Image 1 (cartoon, rainbow, N blue to C red):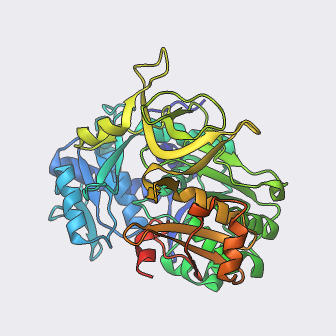
Image 2 (tube, one colour):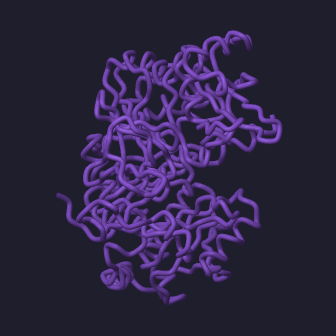
Length: 500
């Protein structure tokens, strides 16, 4: 059992045992664990002496890079909370985020120097020993339940919500992942997720905890199949954490079928449902690779449910979310927040356990709506998170399955329809790799979009869906795409599809 108080202790320990090992590689640039520690340490000392703040949010307005990682390490080492921003986000969204934080402290990097709120970083004349002693002395007052980072997610009102996660929740998640996936310092991790997306938390802290080497994959490395294959094989990357949409796009482009990527020994995916047929094609191309599905909204520390797929993946009819991660529990609540315990009955998925976020920063109203007291008898003091996702526990295998989202429901001629149910039916068709269903409320039409290896005519698709869905749920139109447009997080961009 690993006993530690703060997430930064991972790096503090590994830089002593593996000081000269390469920690991060970014576009040919690299940095060792000792260099990462000392550069972050000196920046943290400057933040402490220049600003003298504690437990305050400091945003990071940097592209994914070694400097961005130094920034997020330095902020937590200074006893504050790091907030990664999307540098490509509109200025108006950044303004709303800073307004929510009630802080304009933003760490940037230009012309070879960090700057924070207009002040340019300058290294101290103090010895490194004195700097380290000062920083660690201040850090000793931090508590394990203090916030570590804030990640902003979309808000239904148009104002982004700042999900606040603690040191304790990250430590619990990373220690679970190390044990579950047998992570050692031999792991060469390909980081696909941007830093403002919580999937990156797994990549970063596995690296710090176990002394892995982390490659920051650029957008260009993922844009063209040949470039992706070349980078992965050249650097012998053996662990990667994908978003299913991106992974499915690579499958549809035949990246794994036409290129030798046998070096990939562990492929994890999370963020949305993984299409079954894309998964089967992956397993066929990489039969010895470990594949694992993970589930957890931003309001949970990355993931709370997982499943490692067996070798006989061809026997699956749908992709399960799996079972709760250690020390987590899954509850199902009906529309009145009452417990649903019967198997095979669809209800809202709720999460209990150490990974539950502290809430939304400076937004108690939104926090109270979804972070509620546990209705289970004897556990009324526990806070659980209502995900808004719908699912059930199967009586056949005891695993958790997701059926869709509450906010993706629509009314069509009096019928309440879940878009995810139609998507699940489409994904059962052998030739469908991935699908997305949208509803035009004005014209009362259901539109289906999909990727596949070959084209199907409109009558054929309707006929194939007839045994799977009632007639009122069968889409009025079907649109085959070469690949799905994606958000910066790598998920299907439903707004972009509407304009197609």
